[in-house]
Length: 178
Image (tube, rainbow, N blue to C red; front, top):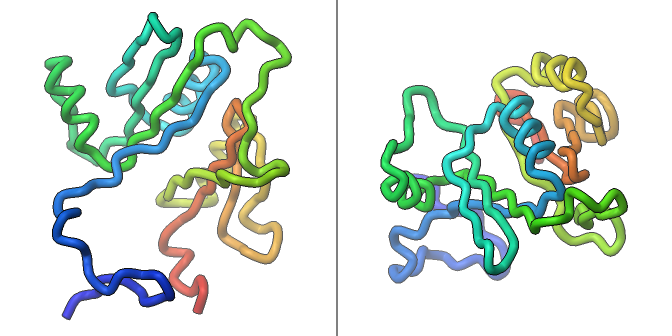
């Protein structure tokens, strides 16, 4: 029998039939300045913008970013690409409320200051040491370096809006929690 789930109080022992086909598609972060955030997520994290949707009547824009697997590509047709985007896993939606970029005092709550709520998003990388060097080269702010704290081999960096991003190398985590 293959692994299905760990058992803990509250965990359903089986997957409800009604949820067949459900896919966790994206997480959304509100951003102050799209030019700054897009430069970070595309230039430093290597993501690509799949789709931008503008909502002038509500004065906001959505940017859907993705880190494609090797050899994977999205459809060229804008409608097909939109549908494809909403069928993927691991999409990051950046929401820009128009005008925030012009306000020097504007800040979003990063979820880690009090009162805490949202914590972080996570990227797995093939080589944590190389990723750390890349982040240093790009002057990315570290919350925690891989050799700091009690949990080794895990880093946390900040994006331009102060959101935390966990950086892990999967192969280094085999003994985590044992």
